[in-house]
Image 1 (cartoon, rainbow, N blue to C red):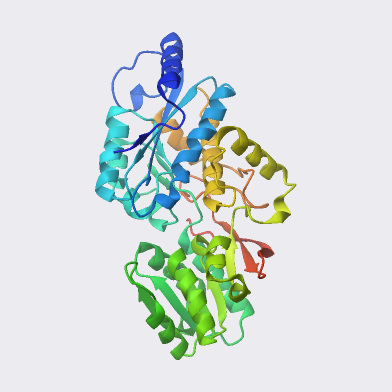
Image 2 (tube, rainbow, N blue to C red):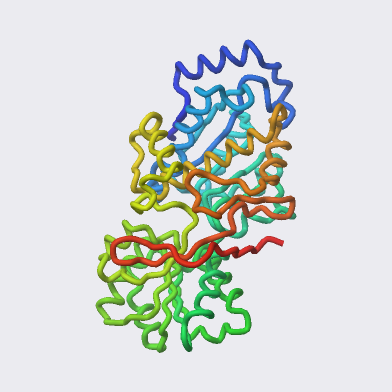
Length: 408
């Protein structure tokens, strides 16, 4: 088991313990009543530092550096943030174990930005039974925005269904006589995007001429791509993870098949396109809500300068070309906003209340015009996207920011 305490260490824990002893009320027991002692706010995280999803480790690590910066600036309303992150190796049973440790032993006020759909789904019921905020989950699964049944669970990134709806809208308004072929991963992610796309097509769903699911364990999706081409598709929807996205780009080029190509933003990073080949990726349409760290257009952007200064001082090991480094920074800023809104009441109940009370919150690294909003019946903080097109060297944004709202 890996226990990464990103803002702490022996010295840091001693400082926090000293501060807490000087100003804190004594804990009166576990649960919400024990939260919010003057001196610190305990925030937990679970990420994959080992195993198949270790590429996402920065999502758990960077917030620790961010909260260290906040602590050095005086904390949140005078309280220090005590941040603890554990490894679950992207294994749901391990996620359950680590969540119990964070809630019952570490007595965190919230679990924040935990990675993944299957892992977070494994602890949803537990977190809601314990009435501990499960905030800003690092997944676009739509199931994490259901305040009626899971009032202590909230997603963060634009739900996969939002992107599906927006792609459908663009196909209907720009493609002549579209015949749509869909390649999708046969899991919650792929089916979620697929549902959003079909919802966006509405009564035009018959424009889909073929669907081809693949399993994440498959070596390739070549057979599925041949099926879609054979069905006469002139629009190719790639609802895939990075490995299969790159394979699909190369396969389309090998076949000489040139449909309108849409690629989900989870697999649209320039590193994926580079592995496939920039020359054969030209024209791919995707979507974005974050500023692209590889886009020179942001070189003089104040938000990017602030981000780079943060990395220089607090997280120099961060990969500045990695979109997950951008994402983790945005999520940490949003958690800071929630805690500042809490004022002197940092109980679990008020943290959840404030998370559901975000109004037009901006971030240094969200695209212009994209703002976080939540409400008592809206647990999707980000439901806006902008379409982007790959030019052969980088992405260019086009059109207006689009609201793909799915909350009721």
